[in-house]
Amino acid sequence: MSGFWALLKRDLLLLLRQRGEVMHHVLFFLLVVCLFPLGTRPAPDLLLAVTPALLWVSALLSALLSLQRLFRPDLEDGTLEQLLISPRPLAALVLAKVGAYWLGSGLVFVLVGPLLAVPLGVPADAIPVIMLTLLLGTPVLGLVGAIGVALTLGLPRAGLLLSLLIFPLYVPVLIFGAGAMHAAITGLPTAGPLYLLAALLVLALTLAPLAAAAALRISLE
Image 1 (cartoon, one colour):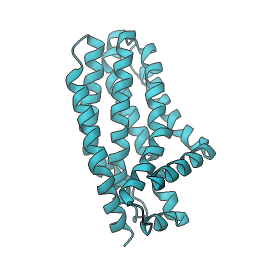
Image 2 (image 1 turned 135 degrees about the horizontal axis):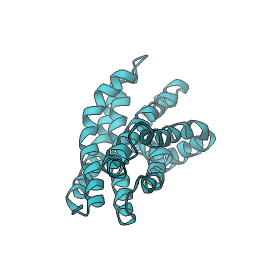
Image 3 (image 1 turned 135 degrees about the vertical axis):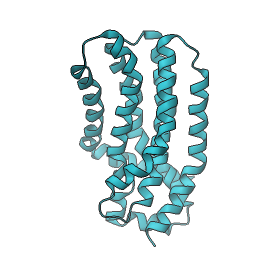
């Protein structure tokens, strides 16, 4: 665990030094949510109906834009090779990198999402559920995305291929996350979608670091 915490601290320090890059992805999330109402008719019922899907699609696209910084900078400066030959378990190191990535982007979505939902007409009693769905779902985006990034790391232009690989895997998170938000907004029970999101998170925490570690070894052979 010492290697886990050391790598997590290192990546968080690098994020603090590269705040501009992190802010680009957060601003993209804000722009997508804020510009969408300008392209539709100003109907409160319509905006309220599409808010769950709008928040989740914006978070998904923002995460996709920032996934390349998970391993690409370490590949370019030689750090990734050092991690591969380290005696520490590579899966734990991958989990540390995904954790730092989530703290720099996913946690921001959790905090900013409700602030954007209120102007769209979302009732105040649905805000805790919206935060909980983002808290459960955004780590899954990072964990699943780490597998795709590791698989395409050796390719020079892997953006399109990465999207094709991980978009199908993001669909369950999008469905259950938006479903839980919609249920909270309409006053329906939210336990089912939230339990399924929690199950996806547990599954991703268990399997994704191992799969990403194996993909890294394959990509760098």
